[in-house]
Length: 152
Image (cartoon, rainbow, N blue to C red; front, side, top):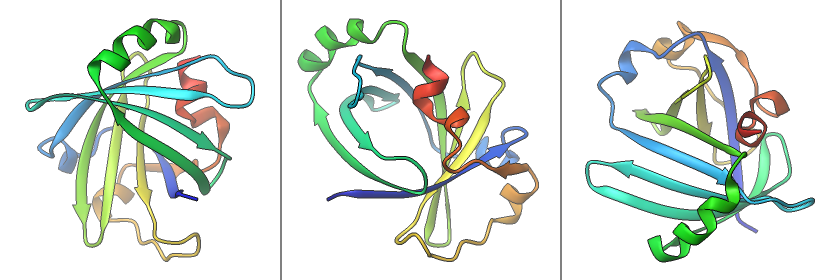
């Protein structure tokens, strides 16, 4: 089972170090469902657009994640079905040692978060100094900060 082991942090703003980092625009929408919520994602940058569909199961630090690339032709007829459950964000990526930090600035929300994937649930994690300066608190597993809940 493909696992995503990820910790998430609330920041008080975009760290200065992220301002010059590579970044992409992400639009996400969720299809209606009771038990399973499928996410559609469009990622845009200077190289063009890429499309994905994803199902995540579980909550908290460790979740099952199934993701695949899809074509524009598959994405476009499904996207209107996500109306009313969408978010847009700008994602900045910063490599710090062995960890890739993803800093998300959400459009329409006064919200900046940082995420990092880990190799195991008990992996040690030291926050980089540039991130610690902006840290409000850890929000891993807090439903108020899930992308799906922000989209509702």
